[in-house]
Image (tube, rainbow, N blue to C red; front, side, top):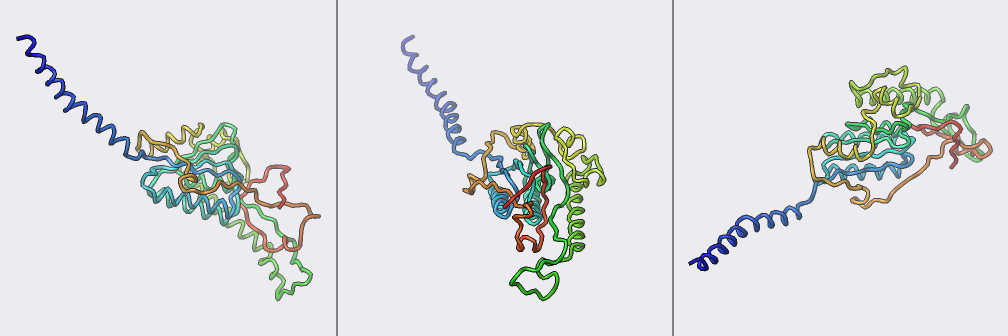
Length: 286
């Protein structure tokens, strides 16, 4: 009688395996096939130029349109760049934030146009010694209309567009717009007024935290965790969006200052406007 019970025991064991273990294994296999949510990482290393801005905008658009990308972390190591290109990327970041959280990380330098981009995100991390700030505009202005040999102009400013005082007024308007963007982006966290922020000064990350220019001191891994938390996702993966979008890495340095001996007549025409931090003693050459 005892031996006759063994088949019944095995049948019960088999039923347990069939009804409990097998569905569990199938569930694990199915779960492995479901794409994990992504925290997309966008990197800016170098100045904001037409080429780097194009790459940044393409990555932001990819993040906005890809449902698998649930949040973005913007890694910034830049002294800024041209006004037009900085504004273009800034506006795309604002569009992204309408549907997905964005977190910025100030690496070694996040100044001028780069900080302008950071102000468009939901949360900003910095290192204690990161260089942060330089809120303002910079440009080189010719002191008088330039006559270029062999070129005929129909007016004194045809060669470089505007008188110096007009260009200075434009710079002032851009500076005020920069401040309003920072004020809007930082909100109640901002603890400094225009008399401090518009001085063009830079601050180490620990002082930027006291001024309300950044939210927290921390590493990029903390920024990724914060972005995931804001997106309310778990079991996520952090992925470089330039690789997902198959875009080349771009790192450029804008020409700004050059020696008078190397200056050409053409370089004295319409001045470019920059949201750019230039470290003391730094000279940029084409």
